[in-house]
Image (tube, rainbow, N blue to C red):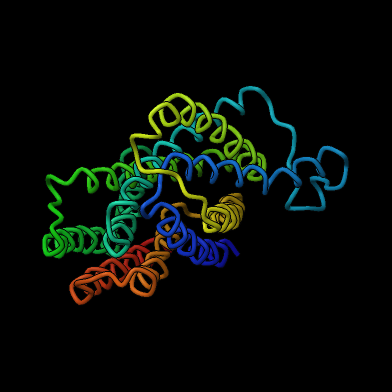
Length: 299
């Protein structure tokens, strides 16, 4: 079941990436991110309220949001800070880079998760996993060459640095998720980490963006902002629930979720008419083959 949930999460994650690009394109990033965290919290609020008034119970519903302890809240705040940092870097990169560039770079996260598992949890890579890692690394170098055709220098472009930082922080969050889901209810984690992110973004909005809003890109409301939150809420819900399975492997789930690059890549072609597709398709195919080998090595 956890494998099927991972594939469902990947599809909605791809839809999220497309609408994220539509939301931040020629738009102020900080307000978009704030509304994203706000709507993610609001989408989950009814489940929290129904759980408090006895509508859901822990024994009969996957939507039940239990009461958690203060210590568990502290763990979730760390999760919120990790994800929000990743999002801030990722949203700015998405605004300034083609989706056919950011999607494949984001797809390298499973390699980072595997390396993290290697260093933190003492896991060892087998032959298939090493092949997957090497193919992914080669694809990044090829993507760098393709990016130069669009005037993107992977060594000097700060937005490339931003998307790599977003990927590293996202991978760290993925490793942390496995730890959290075995100790705290997945619904409680999702509700509270969205709530804490919303509070953090409100501070960023008021302190950093609002006083300088007239000197930066103006904010324009777009309905895609709600879709960003909706697709992300669904993707995260099934992802967190998958991780509650004791047999779930974070390395495999992370790899499958990065399959969302296929959906986001298609969105970059259809909605943004992005260029140099032949080279990027080769890079994408290498990443997909690499993920397949990661899957084989993790079975």
